[in-house]
Image (tube, rainbow, N blue to C red):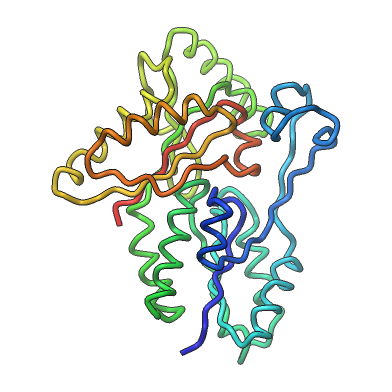
Length: 287
């Protein structure tokens, strides 16, 4: 049986420890921000709070993927590559282009590129599922088929502190961003989630001044039935430099039966640059 290398993007919010334990190979996405080395701050989100300019992001080139694929093929490994949703980035197309650079009748057969239709913690949970399937000895086709069944059971919800970052990145038009700002003043807050591979507003929460509590109540309602049946829910917490909110959300989840926190981490820079500082995302899996 061939060894399978798992190639993933750094858009999945997995911790470095998890990546190393599962021998995952990371493809880095690009953050283009001239001020990133000039503004003081421990991380990019602290820097963003102090800056008047906005970072831009882009996908890795096909050549980045090709170089990684080439190294793994030299080890006589097959490759399962999971990318950020194609609705959010061109990374999936870059990976497909890289695959096409190899001989069609040999090396191309050893590479499979999987569109996660997800990001952040949801993408991370999907990558962990793929690592589990690899350890179980599944073939490339079996992994693809099982992930196609599983990704509909992986969810993401979140809230942003300020819609200006989504507006600056072209994810919200000015009219909608202004409307959201007015709604925030009266404690109405949109819930963002994954829908058809895109991050969109999926609900509206009232009395949502406390972001972690509002997210938890939404999660609790959505998962109550499956948890009551005895099934364990795996969750991931992602944030953009708002540890206090993470602590509150973690405490609420730890008191909830049937919930296992798999990892906590910063939201990846590619998505984080669009949702902005103070954002909080909860992802979960019913698998």
